[in-house]
Length: 526
Image (cartoon, rainbow, N blue to C red):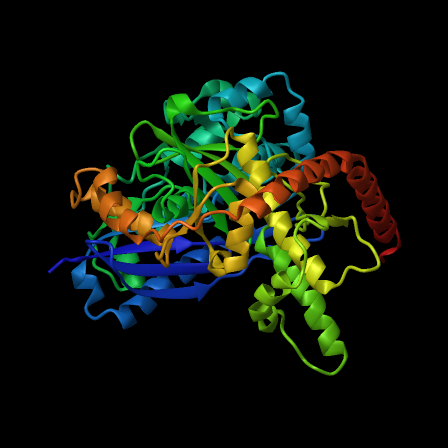
C-alpha cells in the first residue's frame, strides 16, 4: 500500500530525508553531512556531484529505517538552501562547484547594480533587495569576471533544482526563487525588466522553466531509482525554497491574522504571510518577497546573516579559555549553562550587534562590511553580561527585521534549534512585544515539501486543508511577553538602531584596513 511521503531538505551542511504518513506524522529521518569550502576571497562553494551523492545516500539511509520504503512511497518532494548559483552544462554535467548563498564575492557587483537607476523598479517587481547571496547578482558578477563559466552553461539552477534534475531529468525551478530573483511576485513569472536591470538579458536563455510542485510532478527516473533505492516512476514534486518551506511547516500561514514566523538557527529568517496586495516594500529596498504555495499569498522576509552563530562564537571563546587552563571543553558543553547565565545578568545593560558573519549583514540593511561588536562595556561587566547581550542582540535584530516589514507581529511562531531555549524565547517575545508559540514539528522544511507533494497527488484538495491537519495542531501554547522586559527592550532598540546606523563609517574603515593588509600579504607571498 502506498501510504508514505518523503520530504528531502538539503541544507548548507546537512541533507535530510524524512518519511511521513499521509496525515503528517513523522515516521523516520536520515541525515547525511555535506561539505562546503570557504575561500579567503569570500568564496563559499559546494560540489554539485557530492551534493547529489549525499542526497541519494540520505534516501538509502532512510530506507534502512523504514521497512519496504520504496513500495510504500506514494510521492517525493525536495527543498533546499536558497539563492546561490548552480551551473549545469551539456549532458547535465556541472560546469563548476556551486556558488552558495554564503559567497560574498559579488559584493562589488551588488554595489554597482544598486546604484543603477533601474534598481528601484527591479525591487518593486521582485520585492527583493540586492545582496551577494542571490543568483542574479552572482550571475552578473560571473558574467563580468568569469564569463567562460556562463558560456559553457546550458542552465542555471538552485540547489533543490539540481537535485530535482537528478531525480527526474527535468531542468526547472519553482515560482518562489524564480520570482524573487528574476521575476514578479504578483505574476510568479520572469520579468524582462528585472533581468535587464541585472544586466543579464543576454543570459536569459540560461533560466529554466518555472513549475509549481503543488500542481505538477515528474516521475523518478530509472537512473535515480537505482541510486536511491526507490521505485522508478514515483511522482516527484519540486518544493519551494527552504526558507518558505520551513516557515510554512512551522506555522507562518494558518489563517490567523498578524502571525509571523522566525527561524532561529545558524542564520535568522523572519517572515510574515500576507496577501499579495498587503506587501509593504520599504524605502531602503531590502528584504525578500517569497511566494507561498497558496494562491494569492506571499511571505515578506528579512534575513539576518548570522543568528545562533553569534552564541556559538561567545561559547567558543569561553570553551577556549577553559581548555587553555587544562580543562578541555567544547562550546556545545556550555549550552546547558545559557539559562543560568541569562538569569545572572541584567536585561538591557549592554548592546551587541550580531553581525558576526564575514559576509556582513543582509537584513534589514545590506552591508558586506558590517561587523559584530559590543557597545557600552564597562569594568564591571562579566561573561554572563556579554552572553546576555549577544542573546538580546538576536532579539534586537529580529525586531529590526519586522520593523522593516511594517507592524510588529501579533503572534510569533518560532522554529530552529534555539527555539528550545526558554530564555531566548522570552527575549524574542519581549523584543517584538508578541506572544510566541513553538511548533512540535521536528523537520518543518521537509514536512512542508512533503505537504506540497500531498496536495499535488490529490491527498488534500488544497494547501490550506493540508495545513489544518499537518501544521495547526502542532503549535504549542502561546507564551506571553514579560511587560517589564518589553518596556526595557523598547528603549534598548532605540539605542541599538542608533548605534548600528552610526557604526557604518567605522565598518567601512575597518574593511579598508583589512583590504590593505590582504594586499600587502599578497605582495610578499612567494
